[in-house]
Image (cartoon, rainbow, N blue to C red):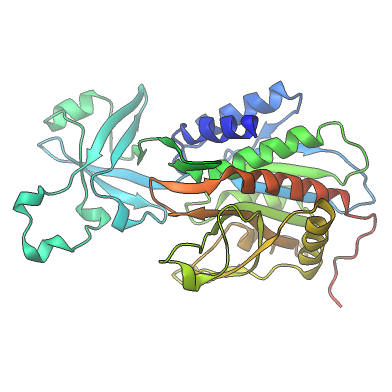
Length: 361
């Protein structure tokens, strides 16, 4: 658990907007090399480690995304205030007064998302949520020339300032728990699998561009052509009053599987898991004496939606850990759920038989 906590914490502190994931990939690449695991990177930036196994067993692609949501600089005003476009599903209810980092060729420049002084807020404005196009970021420079001299340009990536908050017990909160906790889980699995015989061929993939319309995983799946795909991501925790009617997913209640996801907003896609995968994880949970939570949600979407459609079709399922406050700067998970997920995946891999039938009917 100590190693998992350290990995999650280290990864949460690395800014990695969609399209700018390389610092995250570099950290993971180094960790894999230290563990004696060879990895490679494709043209989009996906990080791939293949552990060859029994060719009589179906190949498995297990993947999770490295990127996080944020903003892109679209204009620098004469007074030095910066205007942005939203990148990914940023919660506009959670933007105001947040601190941010703006990427430059020389490093990161700190800034704050401005909020109108409370003393000057009118009754009509008091309960209004600002939208991303209205956001102004103040870096303190005071002029367009000074901002540009600091290296900030149109197109620069902007993320919430990384933070990690250790809560009571095994709970942790902060930026990019989605999906750096998943990245750490996959790394832990890679270490566990190293040198183990009798398993299927396993492709471990840390993907890019998930928050930018699920792009990265599509490319790597077309190359790997797996028989089975497991996607690791958050699952909406529903154990708070504001979420109680959405399901039965409890923080600290163990890892989970998704039985239904559908975005329903713009991207009309989702996943109905393969029944053989549902049965496999139910058996794995029983075998490992782990609780297994179940999720069915509208408004949720992962890159598995496209991976499942590769080639002749892939036997697919979303797996994950409960998380609160999704797409904010204070996302929250319980590390026991993440550790349980690692054990669940390891157990499930060991239960895949040679010649496993994946065709329906």
